[in-house]
Amino acid sequence: MIKKLRRKFVIINMSLVAVILCVVLGMFCFTRVHAFRAESEIAIRHSVHNTGKAIPEEDLPHLFERFYRTDKSRARTDGGYGLGLAIAQTIAKNHRGKITVVSAKNLGTSFTVTFPVSKEKESA
Image 1 (cartoon, helix red, strand yellow):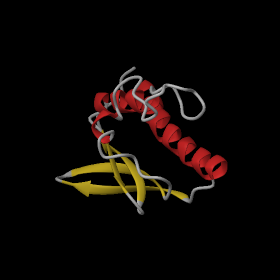
Image 2 (image 1 turned 30 degrees about the horizontal axis):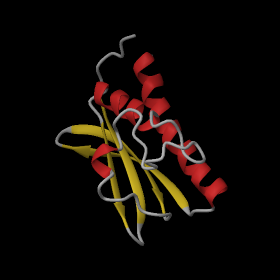
Image 3 (image 1 turned 180 degrees about the vertical axis):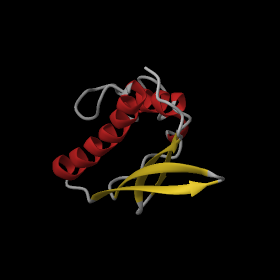
């Protein structure tokens, strides 16, 4: 039960970020959730894409570090505390999943989380 709730947290967190980007910053965002079979395992993939400003290439390797923010001034005029992606990645890894990010100028940014779906009994 707890595992399911944690996976839901990651998906809801990513969806909320998409909504905030759309409403507050006026970006075009979309989310996509689908199931697929890969190497005899069924998985669920959730992607969030926005057409806003790209994340600088030098920041991409650090996005999942705790307290990392692309705003070097550490001012809280925009953005969060730098914990959301670190928490989401930890949850994903604990459930044999992964989160990836791709960002390119003029194309926007995509975050994707993938969780394998197993028939094993969920533990608390």
